[in-house]
Length: 240
Image 1 (cartoon, rainbow, N blue to C red):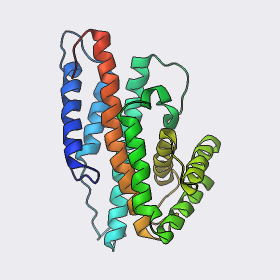
Image 2 (cartoon, one colour):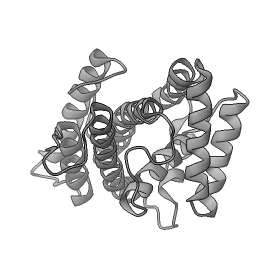
Image 3 (tube, helix red, strand yellow):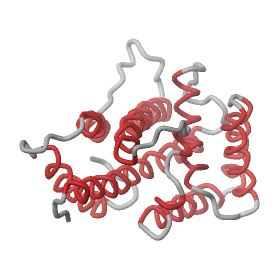
Image 4 (cartoon, rainbow, N blue to C red):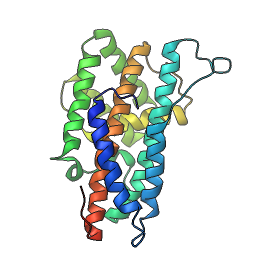
């Protein structure tokens, strides 16, 4: 798998994910919940997805256009995997109250572990790749405005906080990052989003999509391992 952040970190986390998931999925005496099996299938599809676009049919005459669509489609698959994970998460936590997907993971889940570090690295990547250039920074803010204008109230509020924090060089939160990714997904799936919608420069969209995709990959590896280890403790099994 091509990975922008750190290939060695991805390899190690995926290896640990595989070890823990197999302890549950391969336990014939205590079969796993269907939610975990569905998530595992969807997550591995996202990880293994390779996309090609035939220019005889698709309007992808430039490399930037092709790369943007490929990243959008790939990021969408990781979000769909997260939707699968949410059902597993709720089954282990016995959650009955409705909680939107961007708000699913609580501060208690994310504080004091690798998710906190990952959120900080997301902001660092935004700063290093987008804030450094005035054109890219302004284009990203314009993109956030576009997403805000096409979002519903709760989502609009979270995106507005993300924009404010980015503009003021403040820390950002996990649910703000997930809201950004969810908005990108919704704009493509429901609103006819195209490669250059909401931005002036392809580079802006490509950088944001790469950072989001890498974040989502590591985030799912981290949070799923945390919850699977909780299930192993419930089952009375040892874990990594």
